[in-house]
Image 1 (cartoon, rainbow, N blue to C red):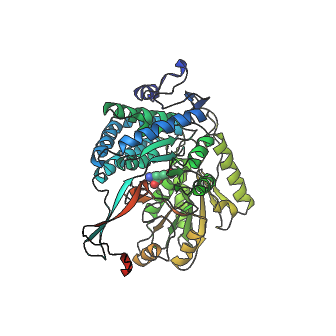
Image 2: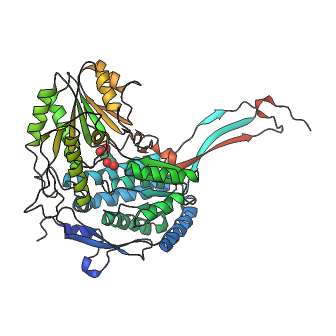
Image 3: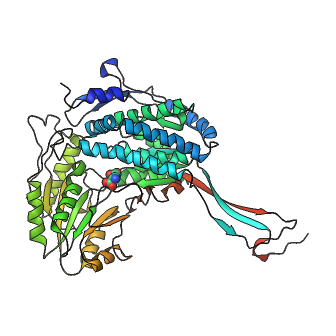
Length: 513
Ligand code: UN1
């Protein structure tokens, strides 16, 4: 019995029944091996996907190049209209797509819906932006000259995305890239290929209704070799990659070798500082959602709590007691707070991290463990765990994509906590819980958090699309989504026009013939 309506959702999204063979849906080109996608929710096969070969890749590239020639000539507000229609379709499919995200990736249904909402939001944002892709005008030092800058479409944008946000991250890139006049080639995670096909089906419909080529949005299912092809390909001026720092370093190096641009969104090791002036109730909600939401598999997940010694016992007790209330189980059942990890490899990494923290001297406060028995047949459900640790531990320095929270103690001034918070290789998201203005401002100052995101009285995860999203250091330095993140999807050109009959040179240089 399909209690949660997955079959209907798959149907609505154009994912064919697995009995029909491969459920490729609308894909640009795919003639390679079959990839099976199993749900971490119940271990069931969702559908089979046909992957793309190197030859398919070439065909995709040719179709993208061809599409770019026409798409770049379309006025940006008209491209905005395409993105508006895409947003409308997403509204229509929010429930089905949110459900599929929850089922294929394992995050809670609420978070699945939230992810589709992020897609809708970025579409709205991009529609408005399609009339605001403006540069500056400057005053020329030469008489009778006009100088200004303009932004032109870049070309093919390669998108490599991760399993944890299988649809939203793609849309942050595409919604902006499309209004900028770029075409996209997307390699979704091998762990969530059906989400990729569902998105492709939705945008393909919009493109068809507008008599536009599907090459504007290309999907390539495949393994890391596709990522390699994109990174090496001089036809791809920008590669946007989300995932592990290890993967990002390879992409960055490969793209840099050909002096291409890369936009990297890599690992985080996010902390919340809890000062003596923190509101404990708010701290608990922010920290617990940050640590166990998406089963700790967000790049913005809260990994470390840095608590002032005067508050330590109180906050520790409150958090430990909140963990006692957590219900772990099928994420489609809205009574549950925590769903499964993505796969058994992730479970092994979770177990190894817990062993390691103990070995390094940490003390387990909330016991972890893999759940088994009824409802946990997939073998991917684990208990969110808490350990008392020290920031210097190797495992604390490392991003483990699982619900493990480390409690760290600080004493004295907030600067000491900021040192601990900054004392990791990653620099994505950070937060301070305080009602003390001085502490908050110190945290936000140049000598404060070194992360791309720094929040006050909000947890580390759940950023809105309106701001630029990304981080420093090993997080990769890229910025996606809101603010002026669109600029990386375009090329800037400076233009100087002389409307006189003389040709004066800049810098007052004399050159007479
Ligand atoms: C990610 O985990 O890769 O800020 C993205 C957040 C979400 C996006 C997370 N809006 O938690």
